[in-house]
Image (cartoon, rainbow, N blue to C red; front, top):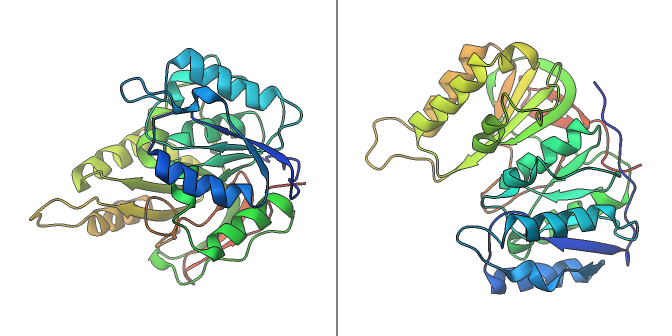
Length: 296
């Protein structure tokens, strides 16, 4: 199972900012846009700031914006303004008609899966409303990943949950969104993959339920290893067990090499991570080493 790199981005290139999911705070968006605009020419439609209940406007508006960005040959990358919820509502109509870097996380897991289903790599990374809060190291790694085919530096110092070493393409994203793709035609083939998972605001028993769903669907019989990012605000008030304890127990049940502590997800630091690229997970040493980059 291989996923092709996408075309590289150069400083000054035109990039599109889209809102395929939830509405967002304008101040946070503007801060992120300032960071992005220092490197690229960022374009967005006037309808980007629409709000309809928990969505950034109607399905038709969000689909037209997303599809238009993907189909425009002048657009060199597509950045999400925010996650939240709503990307899954577009999957039946959205078509990946060309290879272009997709940047985002959380609810964008659904669109990352579609990119991998189409055979392309994509970038799990801060959305615009988070980008303005990230340090220089994260921003520099984001731009370097978009502009250079070289693999990013390794992640070290992870916590070993199950020892072992494996290689494979990195797939996954947000646990709750990823599980909702089971049984749909939008989940890419997982055979031989290293599965990455993160989440926010899910209590330990809910993490157990979603993880068990993956197990019952045969996911852990198909992947080679698991690496866990941030599980933010997942504790039960006055609970007798923590999310870390539950996830550790669940990981050990799989018997697959597994490490946790990847600084990726809804925490204060969200380091860019290429999905679809091959990685080496050495859970015994607490290391995740990218073997391929995002771009050609």
